[in-house]
Length: 312
Image (cartoon, rainbow, N blue to C red; front, side, top):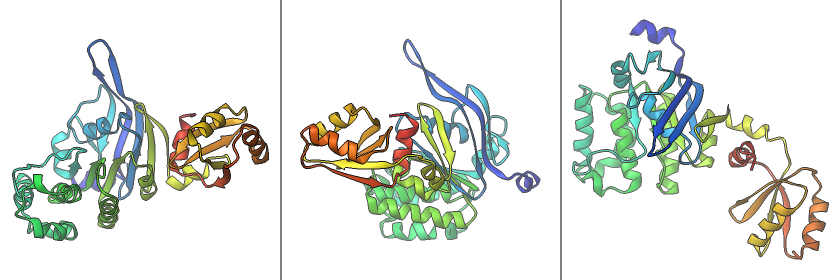
C-alpha cells in the first residue's frame, strides 16, 4: 500500500465512464463517456445543474455504485477490485444529510470514529476547527440542528478517520450564504493539510473557489480547466442590458437579428452579439419603444461561460 501511494500522483482518474438507469419504458444516460483526473492536493469542482450526472460520479468513485462501462481509480486503487481499501481512505459527504438524526452531535461523531477503529481524541486535531463550533450543541440531536450546523457535523464525521481524499456532493445546497462562506474557508484549511478534495455544486459562484473545475451538463463534461482560464477564453464582449419592462426587453433582445445569445441574469439580461455594435443595438431598442434601457459592457463569469458552452 505504501509503495503505491508514493508512486501514484493522481487522486482520481476516470476513463470513459458510462452509467445508465432504466426507467419504465426508457433508459436514462446519467453519465455519458466521462473522463477526467484530479491531482493530489487540489480542490476539484464538478459544476452543473441538477441531473448533470455529478452524484452518479461521486457514488461510483466512493464504491457505492458500479459503472456500466469504463475504469475509475482513487489514489491508484480500482473502484471495483479494491473497493475495501478505497472505503478506508476516503471521506464522503452525500448531498442529502445522512447522519443519524436521533443521535446527538457527539454520539454521531463517536459512532463514525468507532466504525473506522479510531477515536475522536486520536484525530481531534483534524476536526478541531470545525468541531469547536459544534461543541456548544454536542448534546443536541442531529435532526434538531440548523442547516449550517448539520453541514459541519457531516464534514466532521467524514474527516474523523483522517481520509486522504474528500468527496463532497453539493455540500452547500440549501445553506445560508454565511455558512457557505465558512464551509469554503474550512476546505481551504483542509487543503493545506494535504487532503485532496472533490466537490460538486450547482452554485456557479463557488466554481472560482476551486483549483480546477469540470463544467457538466446532461451527463457529459463540456470543459475542464482553471476557473480563470475558462473565463479568459470566453472570447466575446458581454453586455448587461436592463429596463423597466424586463420581460418585453428579453423578448426584443432575442428577436434582435445580431443577438448571438441572451439570457436572464438577476436584474439584467446578459447579451453577446454576432456583430459587436452597441450603437446599433441602442438604435434597435429605441425603435422598439424602449426609452428607459441601459447597456453596459461587463466581464463574464463562470455562469456566462457555462451558458455559452451550452450554446444558449
